[in-house]
Image (cartoon, rainbow, N blue to C red; front, top):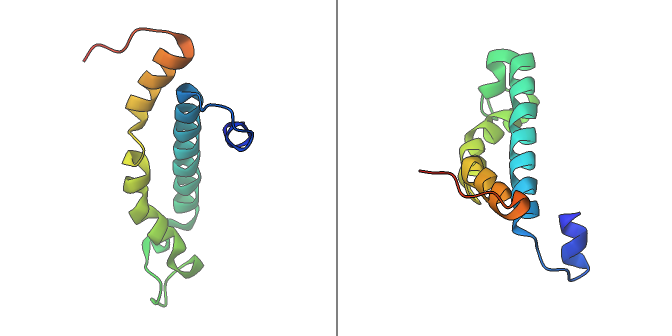
Length: 94
């Protein structure tokens, strides 16, 4: 919906952008967590090692996960934006 709106030239709703970031990040993290659980210790082995599973891609994703969770704003901050812009709630006291 956000991509379609941008394609159609509609103004980007900050709440919808934040929802997309939070949902996407947490979906990615949950999926990676499940794959790591299934593969076990070999999931973190880098490419080039004889023990590397899936050509070391999961190890690369795992190392990049920290950037994903902070890039574009932490999910905690994004939830505040969703509350403020999407639900018209006051900002969280800090």
